[in-house]
Image 1 (spheres, rainbow, N blue to C red):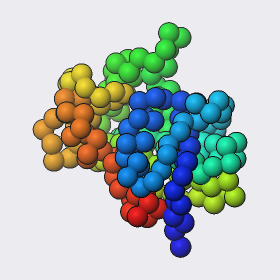
Image 2: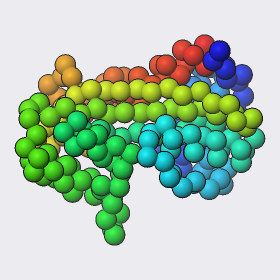
Image 3: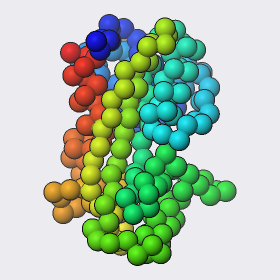
Length: 203
């Protein structure tokens, strides 16, 4: 049976202020007072797994153990069929440079690899988000969200972040990079995972 969140403080296993604000707003109606791992001075654990659920579990359990509070973590990225599911958990790594992350470079690299393997059209891809809600006693609940679509070229739009300008979700003419932020947040892989989390653990 799914364990419910009992109210009170909840640690979000992130050091990203934007993510904290977005998730705190989503969970406020359910009696959750959300604080970030960063604001509590908790270290960021090393993500050593090769799956979204594995890395989300590492972050959620580390925060729950260190804080003594329930903790929520997410791990997300893009999987591309013709590249065998890459970049997957290494989505951000493809953008790493000595000067920081360069997602325009990562998107060019992605398209070049699709060209190199002669990928058929449409070039199917999925944005994926895994949420893990963990308790200090080691229990956790896992929820996965998916947004299917295709990779397009050239890049379109300057909204969103990451690979959004080359991802066109199914049933839409716009890329995530062209879409209004609130519309994207309503239909995204993260929204899909959050709907499942709220339905099972917060209502």
